Length: 464
Image (tube, rainbow, N blue to C red; front, side, top):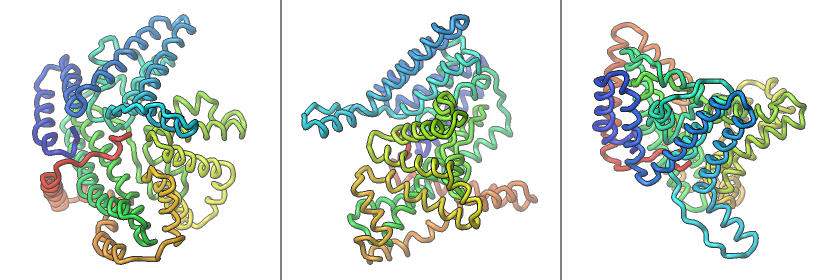
């Protein structure tokens, strides 16, 4: 089940919200737990068992860590068990096919490649489940004494399948003690609509251009740039739109979820970009990998090693294909260079040039992300810079004229100006507020109309 579907908007969500605000408080978590299981089982009826197994293992491990707190060696053993079980599940379902096929290529053998379906959201809920045991071990948050309350944390449907990745310490107190207000609900509904707009109006429309270029064959320079710019906006509005919807839904149920995006395309360095893009994933790796390895406190060589490890893991977290590892390595090299020397240079550059460097570096990175065939990725990169490709072609000119208005709208919505305009309307005089309210209503109608025309429009990050 996806947020941007008619069934979710007009059946599932109204029913769950109605029940949530009717049942007594002591049953609210039970209701959310059951409804979240239904939400997940709608698309993954078999693999819900994997998610429940993960949840049960870490509920048990958390209890054991708390019980043996005065015996650190035993407590740490249960933390290791949590990490090993979760990473083993993730490794089997996500990477077994890649590892076997790579082994076959390297050895010339023909070991059967396992055909394993990737459970939706496994990269997200395993990370959240691990954080439960680790945070209890670190004394960052109390353990949950009732499995339903813990199950609510792990399976809460707004963030279950595509984030934000909510560390346990962030949500521990809210699971048991949160307050629902009309103001929160209104803010949540508006935030949800912003996300719906990003997904249905922006991401889905620029995706049409990205797909046309990707499947066309050998693009001209113009087509290559149009295609990767379209993908640049598609992945941002697709993923940040989902995060906005998740955060909005959380508020509607009384939760305050962490932000996941903060206008990443206005960054003036690659390091800044990654403080604005998928912030909860970066926070997870920093908290549970980078800092335990020593962070940046043990000299330059150790810092570079730690950053290389984190960025390798960041790349392969995104998918079981070597292009994702290359994508992670690419950003790792850039960030290490900025840490060592390039960052000081960027501070002296004119603001426009540092922004241009950052944006172009990110766009080039998306080439490796969007093409699983690494040879094809380099071919597209060559075309972007005029190597082995004509400057333009008829299809490129047609796509430019057809999609330019949508690309300009996407570019504008990637800046702070769009948010400032809407905020002024929301906080302005009565006339501005009326216009804002009518605009929101019209936006919802437009999104609904587009959803009726499109039977299925999954989010990109569902595949990760």
